[in-house]
Amino acid sequence: MRRSRLIITLIVLAAGAIAGGWLVQRALRRVTRAEAGGAWLLASVMERVRDSYVDSLSVDELWRRAAIGLVDELGDPNSTYLPPDRLKRLTEATSGLYSGVGIQADRREGYVVVLAVRPNSPAEHLGVQAGDRLIEADGQAMKGWTMEEARNAMRGPPRTRLHLVVERGTARIPFDIERGEIHVSSIARSLVLDGGVGYVLLSTFSDSAREELTRTLDSLGAAGARSLILDLRNNPGGLLNQGVAIADMFLDKGQEIVEVRSRGPRRSTVYVDSVEQRWPRLPLAVVVNSGTASAAEIVAGALQDHDRALVLGRTSYGKGSAQNVFELESGGGLKLTTARWFTPSGRSISRVAREDGAPRVINDRAERPVFKTDAGRKVFGGGGISPDLSAGDSVPALSDRAFLLSLGAAAPKFREAMKDYAASEVRRGAVRDSAFTVTPALRDGLWTQATRRGVDVPRTLYDDAASLVDRQLGNELARQAFGLAYSGRRLVRNDRVVQRAAELLRRVTNPKQLLEKIPVSDTTPR
Image 1 (cartoon, rainbow, N blue to C red):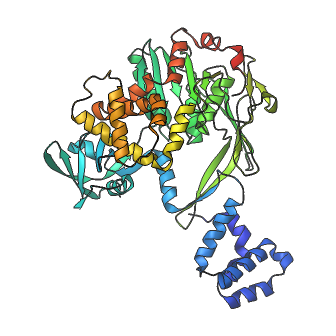
Image 2: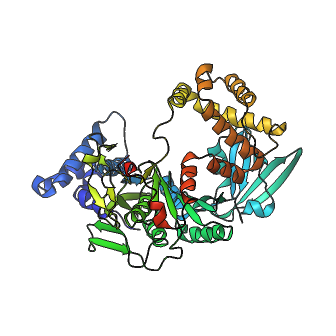
Image 3: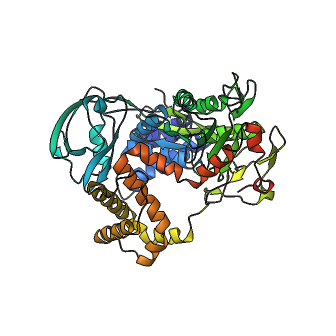
């Protein structure tokens, strides 16, 4: 473990200056201001804060806040100090691994209920099932627990034990579960749609993303998939090498994937496809939105620049930088931007920041630099990956927005009411057929449940947002009646953007034909 050299460089001259009052004065006498530079300023400020601030702060706390302030002053939203708990969560996200029992759960009617059990997890091996209501954890009653409390109880060091009592029907069943290493797949959802269209929702770029995607594509191919939708919406990215590896799966040997430029000895590193692709004739559509970022944008940008995929949806986030995480002796970490990356055509897709530091959305074509794909199509830099084909609403319908704004702080209450209402309807047998539709009676029942919970929204706004309510309630009913797998399929089949992509893919047999479906009017930035 090594201390950040950057921080040491800035404050080493002031290190003795805050150990005590007499040391401060002594240090300042030994070093002239010209020699100390910024260290003199830091030592002076820290001494004054330590001695005169209204609340007393320890020397260690002053150093901690100085370090955090230094990173904040970089003005880079992607660089940050990570306390130990955040560093742990980031490590789990990028590795796809955590230690626990392998239960996915949610709150229903005041209880934590199992939604699904992860494959090959300790909970699955002992027989915990979807639908089980969690009653006790290590002797403590779980009724009324928040999801964070339940998650903390189920996670813990490997080989430690959790005594869990579940309610299944009228029976209470005890489980003594030894926690183990749990792997969370990067593939959140996969299925074959009508017409042989494969669909994969890739949720993150963990260290096993390429391996998992390869297995998934082989399975979809065996199930009859002849084309593919790769859904990268709301994928925040992850590991750079996994973004490169997944782009490599669909490009030809020797084609550039991304160039990474940094300050280090290797100022520029160009990543190039290393093997021939396995599916050269597979028509491919990549779906993006404003939540698509980082490594996900590397994949979308490389496939777009080489005319390998049709990119559709909405303009991506625009994060054209790469970060390294440096572990610190404190147990925390420093996530620091160390490089910028460029697509094969040479474009940076980073959004230009506003004066307040937030990304500035550029809609005017004239403001964005123009680049060319291998086939000569126009693509745009400076503001995310612009889709070849715009699809999906950029903002919710006015009626939906009015309803959501009216909900305001009551939104969590409304969600809880929906979960509990869906549970009661499933229990009484209101949903028997997987092809069900949400009826006005179901919508009325949810309204009654929500108002009983204190949700105060004008009924006219609720009725105007009927399509939004029906989608959300339908998904919740499907999840509780038929499980996560079916509710996921329902979500995909009701997704207008996915259906637009599927419609195009059903009409083509190779990648070139797919790109010919792009209307000229849709090649401008959105």
